[in-house]
Amino acid sequence: MSGSSGGPSAVLSADDGLPQRPQPPFKLSRASKDIAFGSLAGMVSKVFEHPFDLVKVRLQTQPSDRPAMFKGAFDCFRQTYVKEGARGLFRGLSMPVFGATLENASLFFTYNFVQGQLRQYNGLSTPSSSSSLEEDAEKPLSMGYLAIAAACAGSVTSVVLTPVELIKCKMQVQMVAREVDILNMSSNAFTAGLDGPLTILKKVIRQDGIRGLWLGQTGTLLRETGGGVAWFLAFEYGCRTMIEAKRKAAPNSDTPITKKDLGTMQLIGAGALAGISYNVVLFPADSVKSTMQTEREWASSGMSGQTQFKQRGFLATLSNIYKTRGIRGLYAGCGVTCMRSAPSSALIFLLYNRLEALADDWGI
Image 1 (cartoon, rainbow, N blue to C red):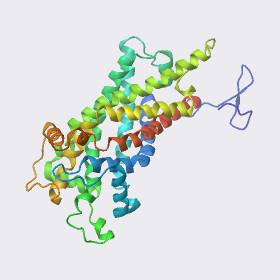
Image 2 (image 1 turned 120 degrees about the horizontal axis):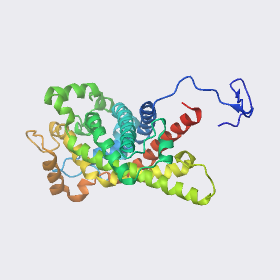
Image 3 (image 1 turned 90 degrees about the horizontal axis):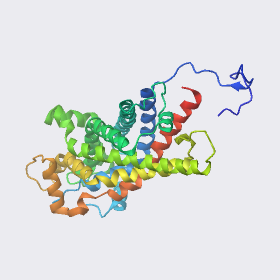
Image 4 (image 1 turned 180 degrees about the vertical axis):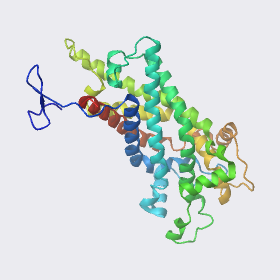
């Protein structure tokens, strides 16, 4: 970063005469970095992972009292592409991108904020630092304290995320749910009457009130709290293991080694491990949540076999999935989810850490 030997932007140091980078006109607060970098990383990763997420939701929410519509993830991909085209694989993308912005901003902000509070509680606070990289290198927290911070981040994020995922799931299944009613229509007519996010939002509020936007909150809370712990701890464990290896390789070095000293592939590896860990831990909770959020769509199409719709609670939905489809039903879509979450999480952590390192280098 500092290899330039001159130029109009270089400033000479009074001490050694070497060119120095000028002071930035502003300095971002720790919270601003978490929100900005988390949001950007989430947006980029969501565009990549959305087709996989759509397949996951459609596999999870198939009516439990009818034969499965899809043989597996590949068959769901194929049917979606044949019937809806490439555009169909990105159905409902606007809400996930919006949700990913909120989700990752909330996750990283809360995670680092709680870490700061725990450092103060333990007398480890470094209030002058606006960098999590510096704090983690100088005074790292134990994995137990990191688990507390991650659980808090996940639980807070679940409140923000549930309404977004509700609308996203409804958008992703409405195409399949309408097949019975418009089976003989042309491809254009097949998709013309599908509701957008604002229409679905208004419909949910009209039918169930504001409270209806948090349908499936129990499942999201369990998934985000437990999954958040697995996500952050897997990444931290991977990074700390590689940092320790670097320290052992240079035992006489006095320079602290941080995440910004890790290579791109090392960050990608730790991020991929985090993504898989997040999904494997509490995937059944996500299946129950998705089913609860889309039951009305299946019932209105007549595909669920219900003559009159009645919303079931979390435990009742869990019991019904297990009775009708067994453990496989609770893990429907888990494979394709891990396929997309590994590279997606790798991308999130890579972008977030590289942006934070860049901000540190520039003194922003």
